[in-house]
Length: 373
Image 1 (cartoon, rainbow, N blue to C red):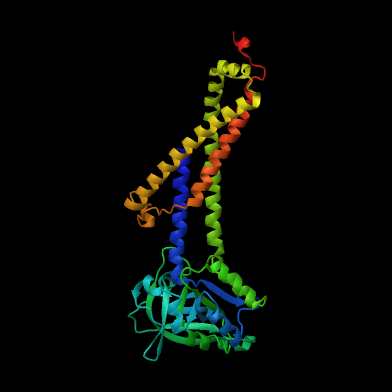
Image 2 (image 1 turned 90 degrees about the horizontal axis):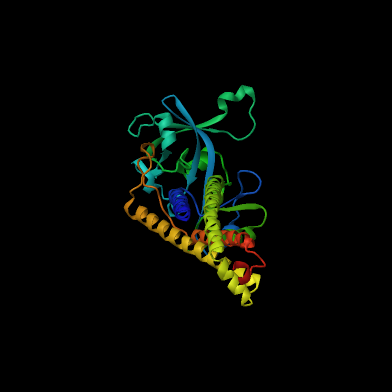
C-alpha cells in the first residue's frame, strides 16, 4: 500500500506541475533575453539577425516591461505594464484566458489596455464606463522637490478586456501595445528584453545554452522554468519531501520483511543444516535468503505500482476525487512519469536488499545436521 500511495501522490504532484505549466504557457515566452546589467539595453541588429536564423527559433520579438500606476475613478494599483508588438501573438496567447471583453491593444488608430483580473478588481475597472483608465509612469532622470508635479508621464486608455489564470501567475500586470509602452516609458531606442518562441519539439534548455554561448556574458538568457524559478523550485522541494516521507513509511513497512524472513530462517534451520552438511558455505546460504527477500520486495513493489497506476488511471479518466469548494471543485490532476516509477522500484529493491543483508547475519555459522538432532 505504501508503494501504491507513493505512485499516486507523485502522480498528483506531476499533475499539478503540468497544470501550472499549461497555465503558464500562454503568458510566458519559451526563452527571455535581458541585459546582465541594468533593466534596458539597445538591441543590436546583427545579434537579432543571428537569433532569427538560429536553428530552433521560430520568432523573436522585443518587449517592454516596466512598473506603472494604474488609476480608475480615484482607485489606484501598482502594476507591471507589458508592451508587446503585433507579432507578439505568436508567443503569447492571452485570448484563451480572457474572462471578459476581447484581447487587443490597438484598434482603429487607438491604444487599449488589457488588465489582469487582480488589477481589474483592485481598481474596479468597468469595460463600459465612459471614463478611461489613467496610466502614470515615472519620468526618467532626477527631479527636484519643486518638480514633483512633473514627475509622472500620464496617459489615458480604454480597457479592452480582462484576463485570468488559475495559477495567478503574472496576473498583476496589464498588456499594452509596444509603441504605447515605448512612448510612456521614454524608452528611446532601448527595450526591456527579447523574447523567443522555440520551434515545436525543440529543447528550450538546449536552445538557451546555445543562445547564451552566442551572446556571451553581456546578456542573461533564461528559459520558461527559470523565469518563474521560485514556483517550480517550490514544487520540486515539496515533491522531494513528500517522496522522502513516504519512503520512510516504506522503510518502516519493509521491516515486515524482517519478521517474515526471520521466521523463515528459524523454520528452515534443518534445511540450512542439510545444505551446510552437503558443503554449502555460509555465503551461499545467505545468498539464498537475500534472493528470497528481494523476490518478496519485488513482488510487493510490482503489486503496489500496478495498484497505484490503476487508481491514478481511474482518477485521470473519471475525475472522481475533487478539491474543496474554495478551489472550484477541480479534479486532482494526474500525470504519471515513468522516471518516478523507476525510482520507486529502485528504492524498494534497495530497501529489500538492505533489510535482507542485515537479517541473514542471524543465521548460525556452525549449524550442521548433527546439531539439529
